[in-house]
Image 1: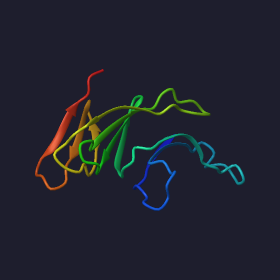
Image 2: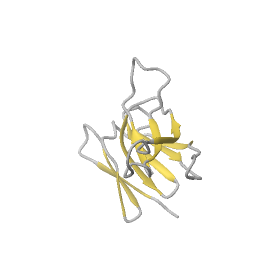
Image 3: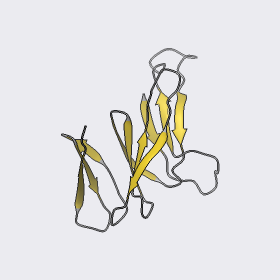
Image 4: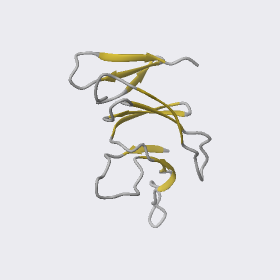
Length: 122
């Protein structure tokens, strides 16, 4: 499984911004080397960075008032996944990246000298 985030296209309506992809067939010889879309979700903005922790995907975005978007990505199976919106977090600027370490999300924000840390609880 791999996750893909896209920049929002102004000319290609109908495309999603976040995808869960099955890459299990890639190492095999053609024609089996296909990438299947297991699920997708349109957050209506650019996805700058992604971190998946357990059954949640944390997306840093450029969208004002929801620079951190959290999606629930479970259950994941070999044939599909259900992706639903969980919540959003308003930061003081565009979230330019996201990392996860020791139970904490680390989010740098453009045009500020701050790095935001959000502790995740089980």
